[in-house]
Structures are given as C-alpha cells and as structure tokens.
Image (cartoon, rainbow, N blue to C red; front, side, top):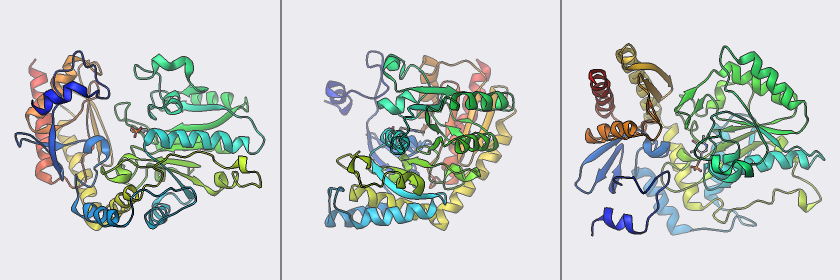
Length: 424
Ligand SMILES: *Cc1c(COP(=O)(O)O)cnc(C)c1O
C-alpha cells in the first residue's frame, strides 16, 4: 500500500471534508525552505508550514541543540521543579518582548496560549473582588479552536456550530479611517457595563482573516481606552510574533503595550509544539496571596517541556543573528519590488504588506474552500510552490532562510497565475 492509501485508512485530517478531498500529499523530507515528496519533487514552502518553520525546516543548529538536550532531560514536571531550558528561554523572551512583560507561563499551542490569557484576565479581576466575564474581540479575528479561543474568534463556518456554548463575547469591527470614531464610541459603551474583563486582538495583521491589515494608530487608541478602564489587553501574537512584521513583535508598533501576550507557532521554530502566555507584573501580582485559591490553578502536563524550550531558545538565537536579520530586510525589500511589478495588473484587486507578510487580493470572487481556490493551490504545487490561498487572497510568509532564487520563483508563479486568470 502507498502512504496515501495507508493515510486514508485511519487518519482524520484537520479542516478537511474527507468525502470530497481528492489527495493528501505525503512529505518525506523538509529542509530549509523546501518540502520533498516521495518522488523527490520539491516544493518551496511559501508559508513556512503555517508560519512555524521561520528559520527553515530542520535547521542544523536547532537539531544539534535539541539532540544535546535530549541526552540531559526529557519531560520534567513543571509544578515544583524547574530546569535550565525553561529558565534560559524565559530570560531570552523577556529580553526581546515589550518592556512591560515580566512573567512567562507555558502551554502547548496557540489556542491554549489564548485560553490561558482569557482565564488570567478573568481571574485577575476576580482576585480583586470584581466579577467581570465579558471579553471584547474583533470581528473576523482568529484565536484558536478550543472553547474560549473559538468563542473570541469571529463567527464563521469554523465555530458557528458551537455558538450557543460560547463564553460571553462582544465583537467590534476592526478599525479603519471610516469607522474609527464609531468603534471607539461602541467600545466605551460596552465597557461602561463594568463587566468587561479583557480585550483580545491580533495586532496589525489578522492572519486567518486573509492577512487583513490595519493601522497601528487606531489600535493604539483602542488600547488606551482599555487601559483607562482597567480592561486587560491581550495581544495574540501567535502569528505576528518573532520577526514577521519586521519587528520582533507587532506590539512594538504601538505606544500602549498589552498586559498579556500570546505566542506559539514560530516560537518553537517548527520543531515541537510549545506556547507562551507572557504578562506584566501587574497581572502576576494579582495572583499573589495567602490564599492558595488565588493562584493560577491551570496546568498542562507537558508544560515547559525541556526539548521544546531548547528548540525555542535556539530559534530565538537564530532570529537575533545578523544573517537572519539581513535576510528579513532582503525579503521585505524583494516584496516591495515585486509589489511594484504586479500591483497594476488587471487581475490584482489590492495588495498589502507588513514585514515579510505579503498578500494579494485577486480580482475575482473565490470561495474560501471552493473549487477555484483548490485549482489555484494546485497551480502553485505543479510549479513547485506551496502557497495556501485563503479565498481570493494569495499570501506569502516565507521562511527567513529562503534564497532570492526561490523567492523569485514564487513571484514568477504568481505572475503566471495572474496572466492565466487574465486570459480566462
Ligand atoms: C494559529 C493561530 C492560533 C491558534 O494556534 P494553534 O496552535 O493552531 O492552536 C491562534 N491565534 C492566531 C493569531 C493564530 O494564527
């Protein structure tokens, strides 16, 4: 039996309608910016496997560090014990996170990082004798698929089935030049109830919302209103973190810093699952008490897994290196140049870029999971390029190690697509 046939037998894939799904492609090797299939065909990973493997797949430096750590410790219970990988990672994270971040809490994925943040925010108020249970979130946001995280995500085909079971959430539009004032008014109205625990947002780029981008100054004003009203601000940087926006974290573009930041995806460089919820000293201190019940009584078994922490620490060391920083600048510049070439194309509706994140809205209507979308996915794969269009949006978030030839090949494939769509 082929791998494909064996896959079909027992596996259930995410975001997949198995009745109509045509093919699931086995990948046998991943290195740098490339994925290899069984026939040794290569695909340039233009989205770094959902923005995880940002330093390239199977980076030798990370492998070496992880191998060394594996000789030392595997999982160690993190309640009552500690270890060097977690300590070093916490020190390194605090050094590069926004200045007000002081404490690091570990979990396993982006959804749980947000669950932890939401629970921290609600208990922060509870510990001060206030019952606040409403969370404000942006429409069309995405924060994950567990109950709290999906409750604060935009209502869609992904979470709609479970709507009646959501935690209490109020959604506001993402600000733009037209609605900015009305959103601020709406926000103040909602907050005036005194029931709002937190505001959760993806800073500057809504990844799953087809890389929708919005202005730092509007977000800053919203954050200011939250701060003034003791509403805990939660920056979900699961997608935007670790250099993709051109800064280490998107929150650096604002003056008002979040109380809590959620990290995952590129955190552990594509090696193993890991997530972090960091917070300010103000949040942390509200959990200190003679009363045990005021502690944050939340744990995942694999909290601060030493192997994962080592992968993360090594990944951040790469991020800070001159090589990667130069690569990031080169990718940003290349995207700019490519944008100049295609933004006037008749099949391009609009384009946008922040750092290495570049997105094109095609000038045609395409359903998020429709046939046309799948055709475009296949169009790229045939050309050795892995991009996952979101409806009409084609976007690139390449691993920082991508070389200019590979990047140019992605661009050329996109131009070919635009020309072909133009003929139809
Ligand atoms: C991917 C993502 C999540 C969910 O992370 P998982 O690891 O898939 O649970 C949450 N928020 C944002 C912004 C994401 O991009």
